[in-house]
Length: 229
Length: 366
Image (cartoon, rainbow over all chains, first blue to last red; front, side):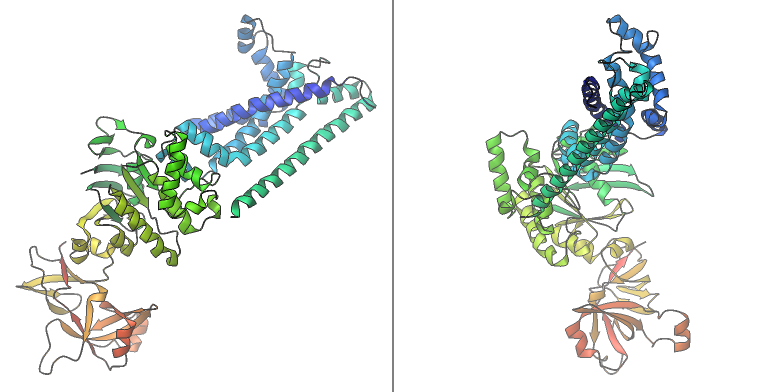
């Protein structure tokens, strides 16, 4: 039952971690940028940001393929520097990050919006720059929400299949993540192998949820400590 | 004058259009809710931008529409004290106070934080988080934090409104102490008449975005310049009025002639008197009515623990019960008296005799 090739696990973890870090940075930046703006143009911006959440992953993957393909605008640019993204490990990261981005963006924005503006204004009158206001006041106060978004993004990256298959394909030891390994194991009638990877996915998810549970408990304990004198 | 403000800003229902100067003494800004008081403070702090005008502090422009100057809030050294304090919940009391002192070396910072907390009687709270503090403690810490930037101006937005009554006087005393040591412009916004009077040395009355009165608080309370200001400063009794002679007016709504001490510079439109200035005298001396004394009947009574408000009808008792049922009992005057005093004459038969002292009456032009 134990797979003799562990590469899908490492590829999945490396892809999800990298994609989550990218998503966290991009999602926070987008949310912070968007929060200070209003107007009809912003509806369009929101639409574009949320598109990967609404579109089927295969469509996202196809659009990414058009973008990063040899004839696509980004693909050609990268080719200038001697890089091809399609069917390489970075392609798994790009696919996972793009698909997870809307979740991060949405939760981060909701978390930043619920921070009482009086805190930010107080910080400004106390001489803080906008960057310091964000880093020392807005972000810490929005942190529980941002963290929830990070975990959602990680989970989404870990489960990403359709767009990854489109952009990165199934290259064992290179782009074959756990979901892709499962699909091709079933495809080639290797049910024990498919089952083993399914068990692995369940295990990872449980560890993730357990960690989250302990973290929230620790948080509420800190909060309780803060309340006592 | 240290702080000069002359700004216009469009609000939802009206425009804030305020011109005033503030010296080194606390200025109480009194106005009903929604008069534009908070927006005025926000413009001075740099949190909102006026549409036109100028704000200068010690001769330096903080905002100037013509020269397109808008100094950002962080460079103004204008401390804002928020209604609900806005202490950072994720930082301890000392970290909150130290927030505005980033430019100081670490050792100096610690020393100054300790000194400020000491002055705020909050030294023992240094390591606590804000949520562990009572309202009064949060308030003192918020003041310490605001003073940490050594502000050139102190702005306070309803500093006492979030507190229970029993904490107010305590916190008010701390504010007075702070103002006494600070001696720079301090603007205190409130809708509470007594708070404005007790804490402000000068007074500015704001109504629908305009400065309706400004100057010495005693003067404004004694002789409000307009009906609006009289109302905002808590006066309850008005009557349309007409001059009929030297020091004599006819109060049309009250149906009587009144002698007034205030000289008639302009034709008066209204005459007014504060509720606690109405006296009750013994029956008029036999043989004729005294000046400014009128028979009256009580139509309604409203009690608070120590005082009572009497709604009075002048000249004749309440209309017949049948008519009275059709419309609420009409009263001419509201009088406010201490209960001790009220107990002395509450059992007396009607009519009582209300005396509107000429010194207490004030005239308002249109």
